[in-house]
Amino acid sequence: MQINVIEYFEKGALAGCRDKVAVIDQEHQFTFGQIGHFAKNCAALILRNGSMMRRPIPVFLPKSAQNIIADLGILYSGNAYANLDVKSPPQRLKGMLQNLNADIIVTSAQYADALRALDIPSDRLLLIEQAMTTETLYDQAVLLKRLEAVIDTDPYCLIHTSGSTGIPKGVALNHRSTIDFVDWAFERLELDGSEVMGSLAPIYFDAYTLEFCLCIAKGATWVVVPDQTATFPVKLVDFLVKNPINFIFWVPTIMVNIANLDLLSKVNLERIKKVFFIGEVFPTKHLNYWRRHIPGAMFVNLYGPIEITVACTYFIVDRELSDEEKLPVGFPCRNTEILILTEQNRLAKVDEPGEICVRGSSLALGYWNNPERTARGFVQNPLNPHHPELIYRTGDLGHWNSRGEIMFLGRQDFQIKHLGYRIELGEIEHAALQVEGMRNCCVVYNQGKKEITMFFECDRQLSPAFIRERLSAALPKYMLPTVFNQMDLLPRNPNGKIDRQKLVSSVN
Image 1: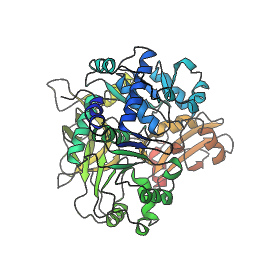
Image 2: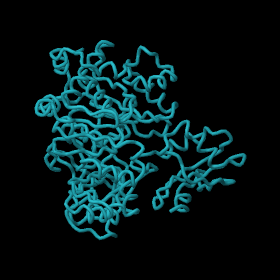
Image 3: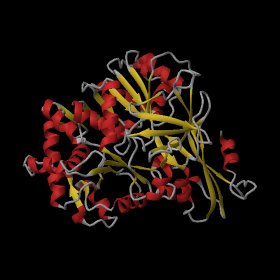
Image 4: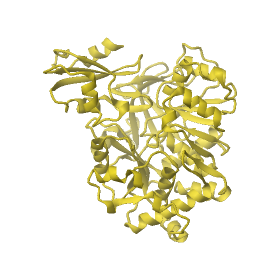
């Protein structure tokens, strides 16, 4: 039985295709043998800096071959990687690092100064360049012996998601949940290592988990889409044409933009055999556009919050859907059960809405250093009074249709999916209330226009540019509102609270 994710690499790509190209970025092209050597060097350097075990080690690197090497090295050391966004505002980054409280941070010479500016001492920084040498710094027997102490319920990685207090929550995934999902995905979604992945997902996004494991286990090649290409649909399609990419796993927003510009009618992308998407609703009209232009590809809709390893449901688009039909999120992944619970905590009937709840080994361990928040999200299964059994309450609403498929209906609370990111509106409000002169604010989402809209009260006139500048110090770009409405007084409901629903109705 497989215990840890490193076994994928040792018994997979490293054993079977060590001379094959593993990773291609703008600056590097490395084989599996090379990244294995560098990763083990990285593990040896980590162990020289302490005996930490089963702890998250932050990785402050851009998406690149270096990032893959760092993540593998951390896993070889018996710890869990925590990939961070190098574009994070200093305040947000500092909060995440304080929560992780790691003895060491893996970074590069280029990004070390940004960490030192946050008062991180130089002796806590491990520069990845030190590991990328032909010299052998590690002892293979020592590393493998250390991995014998890792069990499958130990942390594998931490992924940060928006937090209402202003500090992102670190979701801790374990080896068992990762292996359980990845093994299923390899079999059910027909992933065999022939894939050349056009990787667009950030390294701190859950789609990266599947790409990473497909690379190290099956020998698929991971091709990094450059930042200057990723946000421009024309450049992105051109990148697909010029590179031998045959597999993509993207959030729908960029795919919708490509469809709106009718870019696929100008190129031939029949080379692409698999198109996976996750993170938000893909309008069926735009999905149909992609299917018409790449008719030979397998299209798969994956659904699941970060607290469920990568995904808990899937839908292989195996039938024609009209542009007006909603796309199902489909069926539970293997070894996962979806419970759709009504407000009375009973199972919903067909077509009856309820909260999507998940049980099974795919559940995360919880939120790192946040037992209170963990206890609110991971709760006892109300249908099981016999023994302890945790389920995760997603806060998403859904229902079963007559085909036995799960349909997603939207969020139960004020959490949104925007540009593929899960965002808590409370975090934006928290940051906005720190702006000088801000008395009150409420942030809502215009689902139709995909716009984050901020309503606010202030004792003086504030321009949108001024507010965005102030918010940029605390929030990443994808969380910044795009529409601002200053009001003399925000609407209140009878109990004196801001009438959020009235504001939501005004923009939708």
